[in-house]
Image: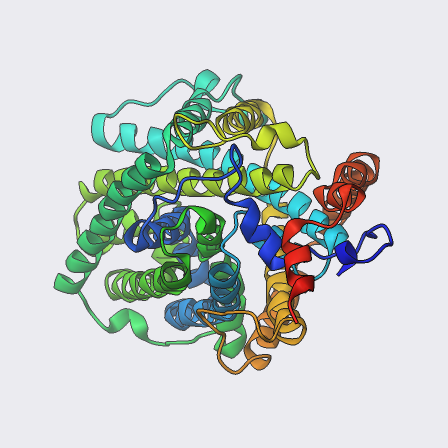
Length: 487
């Protein structure tokens, strides 16, 4: 350990797991343990089921035909390998920060900074883009239900011909205030929204079953295996979000048991709903009908089942679904930022927890305002692609982290263990690399530029103010002295 030697810790210094866990109990920097297994699972479902199932099913059906059903299963399997690794690390290291914290405990400070900086961009841009989508779906709901839409000037960003995206700002600031209020309140609101959007999907599935036919299933795979895998690459990103559950590690009442259950359980629940929805959609509409609509599920009910009024219900489901995604993803970003501040890599004063609400209120408000500005004014069509590469990069490091910790800390208590390690984590890495290789070169260039900016900040600020280096200068931490006294 770098902290136990006489030499100043280098950029690859690793944080000891015991030290990370000890910090969660510090006065003024400890989060309230108030979330149970149901709320954690709902967070996973809330983050995963968003516009993906309401939109991406059409794109996938256009590529794979009826075999898009297999694409949903294949994408779930690809995510499952990384989900298992997240489950092991989240239960073993119940500390805020997700992939950032896990990397700090396995690959060292510089790599942790890179992934943390990457996640700040990924989550921030994701929330802004989803908030913009929320505004669009709100307009679709108002149109379907009341025949009214908001004026473009206040409903769209300058990139799309508007002046100021008021709905996007509204939803971001509303979620910010909810997150400041407390994790318990946020989890309850999210649970209600998850129940509503699952009910909407159940409504769709029930109607599809009543009007089901097998004629649209032939030919089943018109583009063969290539079509199934290509559609899976598109659909994969509809599953992203389960990793946000791990950001709630520190606030879970029983992280050892509840986090693996929530991470894996939310992925299973969403896979079941995705597959049933895909089967139902093909049962009442052709792949061409699904592909040709911006709202494929509503189109399926309208053209396949003759229920035109269902468009309003599906639009409402989309609004609620997106609201839930904004809540969980923004929650995740605040906790990652909080962990980096507590470690001193970013201003530590921002990691102060509000004693009344038990949340990092100042940090949350600051991020909320920045994201609201981003959603209202900044063109997002290109930079939103960075979300994909950032997520896959995090998956790679989490899978590698499991392998390294198994070797460096074999004695560490692991409430949940990835089966057949290192085979499954290696498969998780392979799937992520495969999908990253298919991303446009422009996305890679933007990603590298963002990381270069991050490296400048690290060496100008983070390296000097790192808690790891500060503790070394002040003397070996108490937990390390106690460990060295043991025979």
